[in-house]
Amino acid sequence: MNKIPFIPSSRHFKKNLQLSLLALPAFLIIFVFSYLPMGGIFIAFKNINYSDGILRSPWVGLENIKFFFTSNDAWMVIRNTLLYNIVFIAVGTFLSVVFAIMLNEVIRRSWLKAYQTIFFFPYFFSWIIVAYMAYSFIGPYGILTTWIEKLGFESFDFYSETWVWPILLTLINIWKGLGYVSIIFYAGILGISQEYFEAAEIDGASRLQVIRNITVPLLMPLITIMTLLSIGKIFYSDFGLFFFVPREVGQLFPVTQVIDTYVYRMLKVSGDIGMSSAVGLFQSVMGFIVVLFSNYVVKRIDDDNKLF
Amino acid sequence: MPLKRRIPQLLIHLVFILFSLSCIIPLISVLSVSFSSEVDILKNGYSLFPRVFDLTAYAYVLYRPIQLLGAFKISILVSVIGTFLAVLAMAGIAYTLSRPDYKYKNKLSFYVFFTMLFNGGLVPTYILISNYLHLKNTIWVLILPYLAVPWFILLLRSFMQKIPFHIIESCMIDGASELRIFFQIILPLAKPGLATVALFTMLQYWNDWWLSLLYIEEERLVPLQYMLYRMMNNISFLTSSTNMMPPGLKNVELPSESARMAMAILAAGPMLAVFPFFQKYFVRGLTVGAVKG
Picture (cartoon, rainbow over the protein chains, first blue to last red):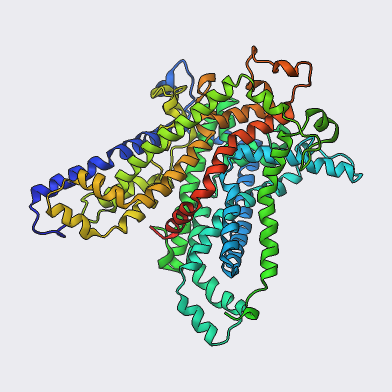
């Protein structure tokens, strides 16, 4: 507090007041749209009906949550959410790091720039546009569908075959994020001090040795942080990917329904507020626990890499 | 570096060119379908290059484009107003957080970043916005919820922490008020950071379908992305009952397949045309974001 000792305390008060004023608009937005909903968590323990209103609807305790876990959907949506996320994190991180290392190996700057720009393309598309793109390949008139028929195979309806969707969704998700994440890692590599590379060069290390013994170990803190951030969101999914890309085909729900789409459909399609809020609360609480736990684990292993 | 010690360039370029193609081809396929003749599509399917070049889809989409223009107007309005307000609000709080001598710095940081760890969930938010704030079916519901995104605040704070404190200190000694320092010194100095966050924010607003999916039911407030979503299964959302085929195209098959793709091109086009030019800001934003805050 006493960094500027010659300023009297009345000025400190004025300074803090004005700084608070600058923060006020964002403070209020966060209060209304993030903290007020937290106060509504109790809805999950009520049987909401519109005639009584939200506050007067009867309490039902853990009934809603029990109802979710005894339904067939619970296992399915939790499994889908976790499995997809695990695959996305493992494959996505691996490929992004490989891409970042390869970007670092490109000698010509003009090529490097071109690649960076093009890799960013998928990031600019909304999931709805991506859904249209996917449809242009695998829809009933899609390029891939047409090819399959032209090659003499039986016509294949992608939107009714469940087994292809785990592969498709993984491919599409990796495709959309690869450019973005690999550039984060690439920036991390650029941040590594050149001295290490020069020293290795003088010692006559091969390129692969440099990558294995210098680039990857020094990139590890960043990889850890990025992975932790993803693990912290393991109970959350990219709503757009699972909602738009499979075009809401009910037949595909066993492999495309995740917690987020389930909560949305419970609320907007089935109108089941109790169930929807119970599942949402389960998601929030599990997400919170996972963040705290993964941060604790990292703190134990290497204190420098912890998130908070 | 001696050439032979490097990983073969050819291999790298091969992988990268393949991935680049995978980024470009979907766009080409959508473009191609939008320029194809409907009759040909129904007979032969989509193709990477139009077999029969045809502008019917665009003629259809752009003929009396009342709905389309309305959606564009909403999307542009939301993106512009939203980005402006968001950058201002987030810069304000980010600056306050960047000041080491601010009394409530730690408490305020916790207040902001706790929302990244825990949230109330969809249902309470939905009920709050529709039943208590009565924001449903207003343009504000498309703007307000994204005005203070913790991740962007973190990013802006990192940018502002790089501004040397002695600049602020000397302004204080000269008797400038905090508000004046913020608007006349900090904002101009933080321009690259503001530009980065402005771009991310604008992209978020432009590409957003989530808020309209939840809170918009009135036709006049439908933004572009939401319109595209509704057209996914039913092209008729594009046209009102009075809006028929252009006069010269009567008795032609309704170009639903190609018109849908034409709409996707019209929606994705503006962003795609603009953003490659600002790519360096994105890269810069990501780089700063990667540094632990």
